[in-house]
Amino acid sequence: FVISADLVNISTHPTGSLNELKCQFISEEFIGSVVTLLTESEHGSEFKIQKQQREISELDIQPGSTLYINWDLAHAHLLPSIT
Image (cartoon, rainbow, N blue to C red; front, side, top):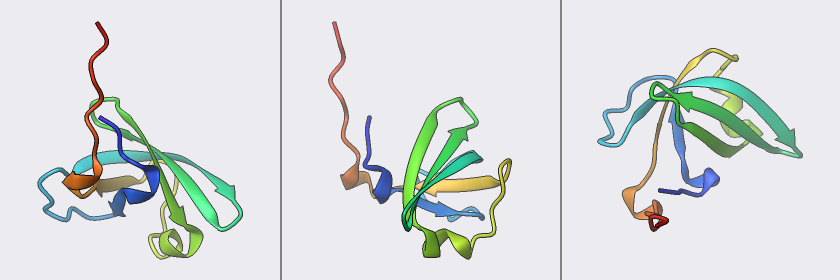
C-alpha cells in the first residue's frame, strides 16, 4: 500500500488507533519549513513522513526515539500486485 507522506500522523505515545505502528525515528531532512522524517517499523518497513517544522518541534524527538504512526484508512491506497 501507499500513503502520502504528509497524511501520516505521529505521536511519541500510543494513541490506540487501529492501524497504529510502533516505529523508530531514523533521521530527518529539512527543506524550508517542511521536515521529512524517516522511520522504520518493528517489521522493517520504512515510512517517510512530512510535517511542518513547528508541528514536530513540540515532540522533542532524537534519532532512535520511538514514534507511533497512524493514518486515516481512507488515505491509504492498495497497489496492484505485479505478476
